[in-house]
Length: 341
Image 1 (spheres, helix red, strand yellow):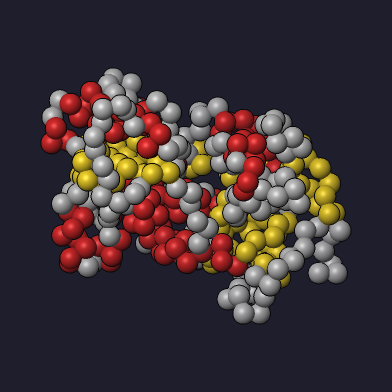
Image 2: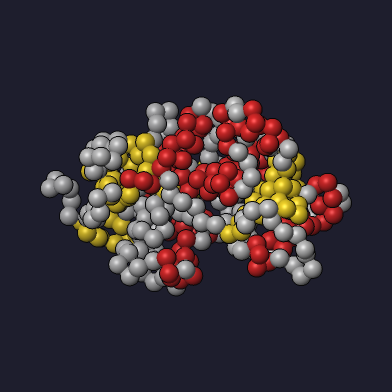
């Protein structure tokens, strides 16, 4: 590490109650735990809402954490533990846990468990746009929900079980929702219903949705009340807000309701008597490189892909990148190219 610079460029969030970001000169980060690796960052992606996490969920953070955003990261290994499965020069990608300093800096420290090898055939842009959204969409239906991922690989019983299920995805045109549509379709769900706008309808159908509900024309409650057979075995919410209450009309009694944006049980309307077969509810994604490697194989095989916004940003344009994400105008993941080499 003696040839590495002592100082690097890093983006900091000085005040956890403000979304203002600044570029600073910071000390070179150093691994401090046996499981940690140092990587040279190629690219990172902002995540909607992440600039409010420390203020809203203070129990997840420590005062010692350097306030660097950017959970999605892709880069090249500089140093790695001997037994990590990684070595200097490896191209890697992954999702850095929110409790740790992120990837919006020239070098960053990651845990070996969070990372996966970026396979040949997968570029930096596709790689960095994948981890957070894809892992969330993978864990929601297959680990929090009722779909069996083994159907993707041809398991006959898993296919039979999945074919009998209706899956409703609220926010199907979001980065997470688009992945969820693809995974549910790959797993052979009997129906994959996407809640999105008409402008996104064709794009989401191409990803595998069998039906579209336009939230600008009707609520999810209005849609399902037209035909009770429309109720879904699994409801996955990627939007939150007032729509959570409407989704209680969509989920079947005995089904599963999962959200990454709020607590479904806190939004349950008075008088709704439905109960869940499994607990479901709000969940936070786990940063698991093993699952990411599995997802990467599907991407390389052309069976799934991330949604990436057309806008690309240099490292010194970090503020514009985060502003685009926070404005909710982005049509997919927004990529910040930290290193141009």
